[in-house]
Image (tube, rainbow, N blue to C red):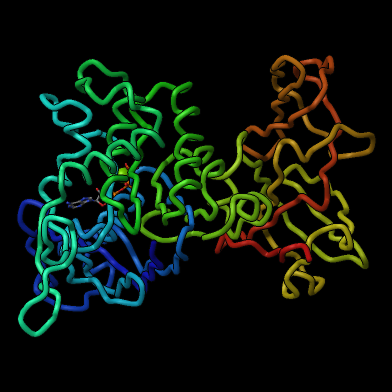
Length: 420
Ligand SMILES: Nc1ncnc2c1ncn2[C@@H]1O[C@H](COP(=O)(O)OP(=O)(O)OP(=O)(O)O)[C@@H](O)[C@H]1O
Ligand SMILES: [Mg+2]
């Protein structure tokens, strides 16, 4: 068990295949653009986070955003280019991977094909030495001439190894597989063996890098809850990497959303959904994706008048919206993105008039795709009941005012506070 502290952690990869010839190649403390010109690649930028003992943290973000790189720096498989990383208050930037007490499980299970599950799980333990004191046949410490215990390093005994393997196999429900070889097992079973191998090491921290990506959809869902159960049983700190936001939302106690090497937001699943701090997080979390309308807003008495691309206006009651930052309520017009999820739009009289492009009936509920003049993208409305709507016809829609989001058009950061 461990607390982790990452402070201003960065990863800069050196230029691949020899640096491009550049004036900035040998300069230290380069700016980002100088780094690009010298061919270096900044994969993780200013990563700051405190992770409490026993948390289940998920790193999520699109491909190439720096999730694996961050995980590998935590594991000690990758040097930290700048910043500090502490485990339980101890600076470990220069501590070897093998001395960090961290176990990592990858997408490729990396099991030895010629070994049984038992051998795969126990292999690392056989290699490992632990600190003990010299003992006699009965297991009692032998003392030196001054009456002190004699410190030694020794291998695990067969019995100790067996106890650990049986314990892990029991927790993972794979006792009957211990004599099978990986080639005779399914993907999910192999993944459990890989988890078992990590568990018997009794690590302070578990790192899992897309461990379920090789499994089919159904097995992924099962294994997802298995891993959550495993975390509950072990009570160890888990860091789990995925690019699947549903996996992130269902597993993590806190989620780190990353993009282009930067942390976008660190929050609980429900806060990410309810209070995304910027447009990227808003669009990344939740299915179907949030709708974004390019609008201008202006405060008029107790309402916020919102003008859409096609010129229509709607009035949103300020006391129903989450608090809007003062500077947007100065009586002037401000351009913003109005974000609203499909499930927070209703069909209602005297609302905004939009054109139905197509409808999709999904059993008991329904998706309505609609468009608006002046907006290139298509929007979505989710209905809980089925309705007959004519393609190409107009409907009137209303937004749940308390579930509306707004983001500055330039910075794309939220201009709304959280609900009290
Ligand atoms: N050894 C390396 N040398 C140079 N650049 C690298 C190296 N390893 C990774 N990168 C780059 O760093 C960036 C972050 O990579 P990383 O593997 O952390 O992404 P990721 O978020 O795990 O993505 P994915 O979801 O595809 O696994 C990528 O743009 C990648 O090309
Ligand atoms: Mg990765």
